[in-house]
Length: 108
Image (cartoon, rainbow, N blue to C red; front, side, top):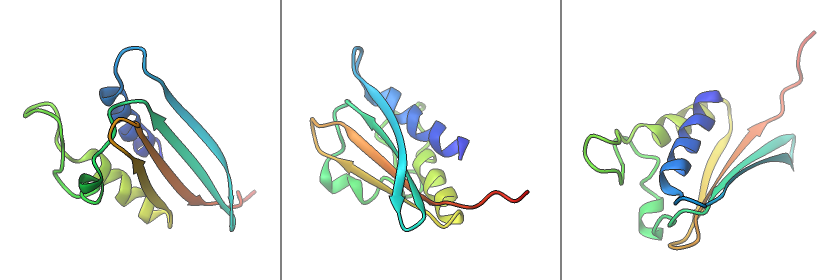
């Protein structure tokens, strides 16, 4: 999960202009799941791009600055833990990534 949060935060930091805000919240979301939300005040992601951002090698960064692996790997890790990863964004409105993960009881 550390890698998931690190990848999403790295993108948020890259997208958020100086003076912008990045926030992280966690809360129960019902059905024995927890929601972790990461929101930035960057430029947002156009609607037509939102479906492809979790695909392999998709990046908006200039050549040599991004591999297009971060969100792909994050989505894979979340799926391996029986969770889901959603993006809510609009041009000029920033981006919110919502991670939903099942709550697992710790064993003694």
